[in-house]
Image (cartoon, rainbow, N blue to C red; front, side, top):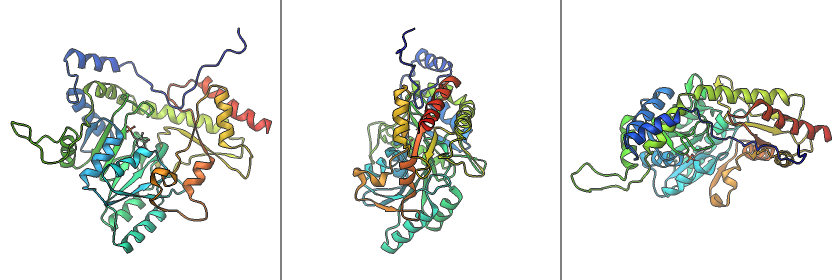
Length: 386
Ligand SMILES: *Cc1c(COP(=O)(O)O)cnc(C)c1O
């Protein structure tokens, strides 16, 4: 055996097909429904809404498109303000810029890593003094963990502002018995290739407000007015999901609960395998919530080790293992350099600390136990050497 043979690559979160996808795709081909409408799209909407427990869903081309349409439905436009979690993927906030609104970023708290109710309160008070309240608040549930929705909802209700719940990473997670993404006025999911289930790409807007969902479908298909000729009175988008991809989504949704279980088992194995290293902690799970553990994310305490996330990342990469930094807070991005930011508390923003100390470990549900052992061994070896 060649000693230098490279070990198989372990990816952060690879697509995991069930085998049933081809049946739905074949049916779409046989019936020639190769379009952004069709029976798979309708069924996927019904099935996902039934799974999460909302009145309905609108299947779209991406999670980003779903956020964009949610903002449009809330009538957010030029020079309006939108509050948004800072510790997230840029896709949470890009749609704020699409509609010409001003993003204001809100720090995380340490118990969920999501939007801090304390920072949100500060942001509302400052906005009230300026006489410019936000039109919407985008709350993100990162890595599968739900934000403190009760506290955030209470504050938003006081100011009569709607929440868009970015649940792109938290399909299948629970908050106090409710499915993540169903607590705000609108919820959005993503079926991008790296999410817990995937349609290769795609998204869904969910809500209990059927009228709004109907409007989302209208806006998402070029806003064609019901008329025997081409008639338009508002700007529309080409945002509907393809019937072929909706077929992939349907097959994937059949196994969502298994995928959540597997990702949670992966998390448990990391926690168990690394528990003897005091410098390593993991993203917490708030009481009365259930995370899908989309990604297992560890934190390194700099007071207990000189090993940084960067060192671990490089050691893993040397073994052909992919890992990623935690989201780089959006208030630190050049793109948003003029945006206001409200911190949780203390000297350093909580989101910045999590960014500095965190590392996302490979968490795909099709990872083998042996592959996971490799990851754990690389990390353990580093701590033995230091
Ligand atoms: C993936 C993701 C999105 C965007 O979803 P797409 O389907 O890729 O457009 C939005 N928000 C968060 C937090 C995400 O992780």
